[in-house]
Length: 393
Image (cartoon, rainbow, N blue to C red; front, side, top):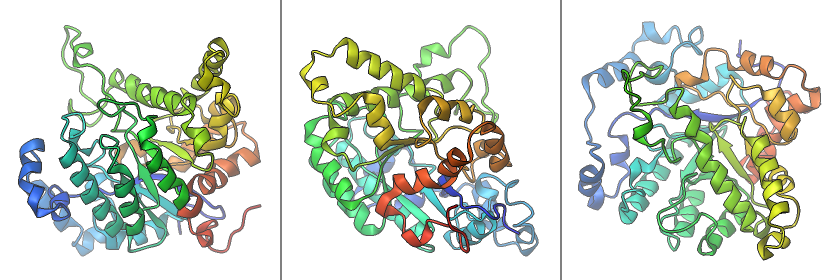
């Protein structure tokens, strides 16, 4: 019996848990040594990863696939790193489709911040080959390709390659590239390529500017994250997640990128959404206060209306989703599971149903189905709009 029954649900956020060294197989051999030197990421499989991989071959372990679908996380999860197992996971979930993102390459290994433009481009291309191959086993799996903005001239070429490989969405960092704004007119050819393909531009957590380390030094013991280590999010560093996307969206809207490419959709994935109503009001306020600026006079509508037209976002399950929808718009929010990451929890459908208390049936259907279809455009086969045997009410 699938997790979802009698309802069409599209999952806007899931991940492949690539084993260490996986990207090396997709890198141009000419740059592998330079990649290792710059990132420290060697093609080595630690012993405990070998055990995790072997576990997926154990018949006794596999007998619990269905019963433990939402309980096993990260490398223990069904289809976490073995592409041949992911269709079974989708069958058990009952999702109509699933966007798939990397885990290890979310920040493109910091190469852009290092100023390593050539390596950043090659790592992105390797990532795109890896993701398209993983998702090629099932059309319900929607691969995401990555395009660094650090090299404006090569960005359209990388996007074309990713689209030709079968990627259904193009990920860019929410952090600004070194030396120029993400709204720079030199990136217009990139937006044109993606708009013409009819697929979205996506932001995902991991590509944002991090909290300065000095904020961590509060004179007390170091706070461990919920994984038990100090390398990931804490309640304090969590606060910086929206800052980069807030600035980048502001630049893209106010500098006219959304208007120059009105058919291009943007999505913010795993970046939360409680900040969205404030951003919309603050941008409208700024546009009113500085209305004499020529660029603002050229806008097709209020910034909040432009965002409603072209921008979609995934709330976290612990956020008040009904409040976000009520204060931003029914057309803006999307369901996501974050499978197989721990952060997604053991029952995302229940958590979001609870968070949608008070929302209308129309808003619920938009959250689980309609807004995702709108975001993905031609990246989602029309045959996948509804789960088998179902049609939108």
